[in-house]
Amino acid sequence: MSQLAKPIAMVESGPERVRVDRSALVFGVLALSLAALSMGLAGWAPLGFSIVTVFLFAGPHNWFEFRYFLSRMPARWGPRRNFFMVGIVGAMLLTVTFALQTWLGQAYHWSAASWLNMSAVWSSLFVGWVATLVWLRGRERKQRDWSWCWPIALGLIAVVWFYPLHWSVALVYLHPLVALWFLDREIKRHRRSWQRAYRVVLVGVAVMLGALWWHLADAPNLAGTDGLSMRITHHAGGGILAGISTHLLVATHTFLEMIHYAVWMVAIPLVSLRRMPWKLTSVPIARKSAGWRRVAIAIMAGGALIVVILWVGFAADYPLTRDIYFTLAILHVLAEFPFMIRSV
Image (cartoon, rainbow, N blue to C red; front, side, top):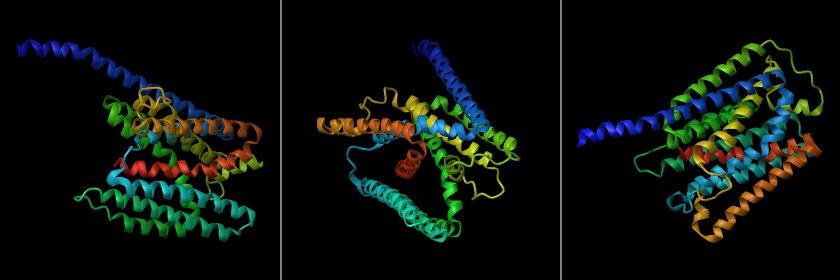
């Protein structure tokens, strides 16, 4: 009896295995194709591609990212209360201080030294906040001690004060890569058969990045001298990373940002949600009670309204809206850290 059942199981599992392998192949081909297209556009017209991608995807990707975090937030915190309280309050306070620092600096025409000092102060608070989250995460299990985070934090704070501008630029380039971490965790959780294809995609993205650097290493600096072009160039490290073509810097940053947008808007919903993003059946607080479900609906509807407002603002005054967006969007950057730490 068992010997008859075994071949039948093997026959029945064959088509399923082929189907899964094909889905992984489709995922890999589509991901590499999108990355190649993004690399080509970023290298060919970095400023124009940056403007278009921010206009189209900056707001929507924040909505998708917030939707993902909402589905990962437990309805009852229990012993994790301190962790989430530090995460939420810290992210909001850091966002407020970042925006206040930007406004005060522009309003009172701070000197370069004042900007550097205030930037170092904010970055030090940020490092301390992340270290506190790591330490709290380690305390959740008795056999785990993550107090090693404190000497590392002190070392990073020293780097912040010695190289405040380079630290800021490093965060700009590292932030898009965080989305790849979340995608890796979701594939391990929901689509294990895609892991090999995903590794190939990561290698492909690295090769494309290398090809972009090789091709643009000797490219002349971007010719744009208007206010918007200068903002985009400065955001990518122009004037800070001396001796590197601004064409290369903007192309690299735009390419990584497009990868970031694609991961949050396409790949992660495809892998983990498995349903329409506006359906809140996977959101813990929405299942808690009818009242909390209405709260979740209101939050997501408010996020959608902000996306529309951003599009209107970009269409009316792109440079101003871009400045406001990148000042306040620090909140979504900070929100990634508690969930990234909890995934370890």
